[in-house]
Image (cartoon, rainbow, N blue to C red):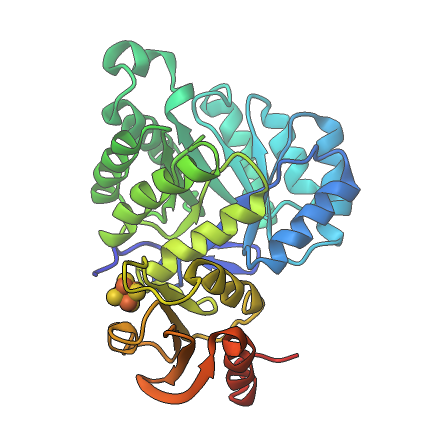
Length: 353
Ligand code: SF4
């Protein structure tokens, strides 16, 4: 796939756009004023591979908490601002690496200019975060909730920032409706070359939100659109990061640990494949190496179907097969197959103790 050309910007020490990998972001759901819980959640996100984190700044206390949060985390921090431009300015002064503003509710360009002046001084980038749920009144009146209204909201803001010579920004055009999200990003991506933060907003619970995000984000990425993303799920944000990397891995845009293949099972299945596949996945969850692992239900099609895999298991009647690059290297009774398989992975330094 050909990636849309985009300008490069920085969020702290992470580069976004141009030829940089598509960056994974998440957002905390703790009370930002509760520094301890927020830091703990960000550290969990860091362990899951999250590369940039955003926190909500609803008031001045949250804004003050940024200093201490920033000191205890490694990844860049974005302050999420709605309504009050003064909180944006204060957040920059307190160490935020990027400010997310919503052009629909920041209170006009005069106020935005004040934020930009400080962002420029501090070398901080901005995300223009348009949201279909909070569009400007005149756009809603003329165009309703539509991709044209979403794109125009973003374009107005882009034009304003360009006129005051500020181009250190990225743009998002989110809606909770997948077709509207895709249409808005497609339209906008043809009109500018600013980096795009993509996602489906308020996507839903882990099950439905994962599907909506995979379809929405996956469609855009497959068209080369998107430089950074957030999967938005109701629940533990660590799940957002896991889902984000699975989407990127499935499109071969990021390598982030093993890729698992397992068959859907059928009438030929000879082992408790569901459990075995889950156990293999669990045993390898801290592996960061780029390796393909297949867990297949039978010896007839198993190794053949997973020929591309680096390592694999194929269940058999009582005895299963362990294979490496399509070749059988061991025959083991089903009871010990997981143990033996992990041994092979340890011998090859894929898995460490
Ligand atoms: S690998 Fe074997 S058990 Fe799994 S779906 Fe294919 S034929 Fe069925």
